[in-house]
Length: 76
Image (cartoon, rainbow, N blue to C red; front, side, top):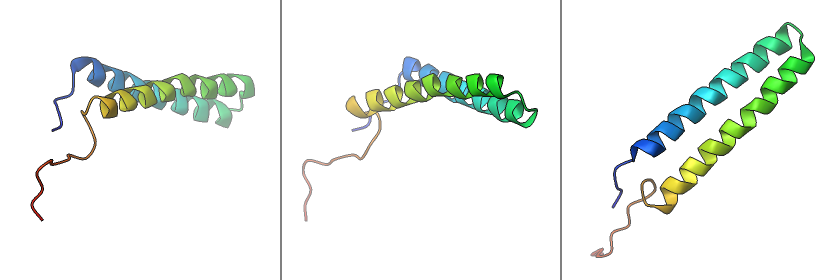
C-alpha cells in the first residue's frame, strides 16, 4: 500500500525542481548572450539539484511511497 508523502520529501522535491529549472534557464540565457564561463557554471549548478531529485525518488521508492501496489492475495 502506498503511504502518504511526508513533508520533507515534498519539500526536497520542490526544492530540486525549482533549482533545476532556475539553473537550466540561467544556463540557456547565458549561452545565448554568449557568456561561456558563466553558462558553464550554471550548467554545472544543475547537477546537484538533479542528484537531489534522484535521491528523493529513491527514498520514496524504498519506503513504498511510490511504485506499483502489490496485492498479496490475488485471486486469478
